[in-house]
Image (cartoon, rainbow, N blue to C red; front, side, top):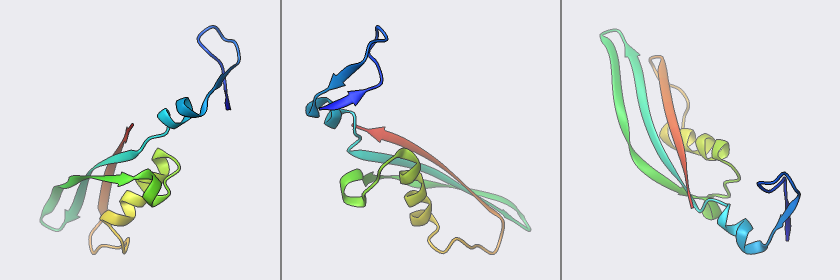
Length: 93
C-alpha cells in the first residue's frame, strides 16, 4: 500500500498496489520536430512518432523519457549547423 498526498476532500488517503500500477505509465509516446538553420535557410523535419516502453527502458518520469528520446533522435549530439529539437512526451497508461 502506498501513501497518496490527499484525496478530493483534503484528507490523507492510501492507494492499494493496483491503483499505484494504474498511475504508472506503461509507454511514453514521443513526438518530435527538428529545425536546422543552414546557410540557405531553415529546414524543419517531423520525426516519425515512436514509443518508449517504461519497463524495458527503465524510464522513471516524462523528463527521463524526453532525455532518452533526444539521445535516440540525435545520438552524437553534434551537427554542422545550429539545430533545435522540440520533443513532446505523452504518457500512455
